[in-house]
Length: 79
Image 1: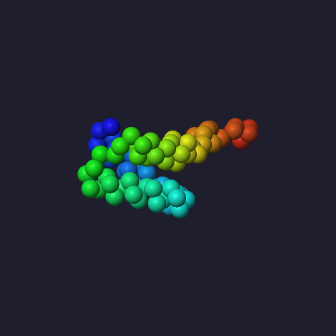
Image 2: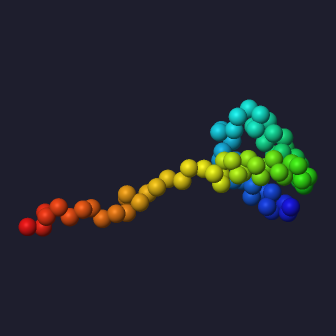
Image 3: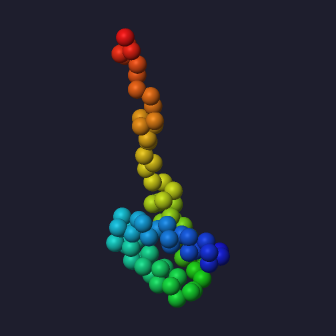
């Protein structure tokens, strides 16, 4: 795992910190502290980081904006 990929995971997860439960937040802060010390994460730590990424970023609810881009129905108002 490159440090660049590791950095990207932390940048993305920063947006979801407030959604973490207490155990996840504790693990995340521990991993973040190791990251700030320029330490490469081991395989298990990276798995935990990827699990948080998958849970909060990949599986997030995507909003549907289709209704904003549809043309309004024509109700014979052109007469």
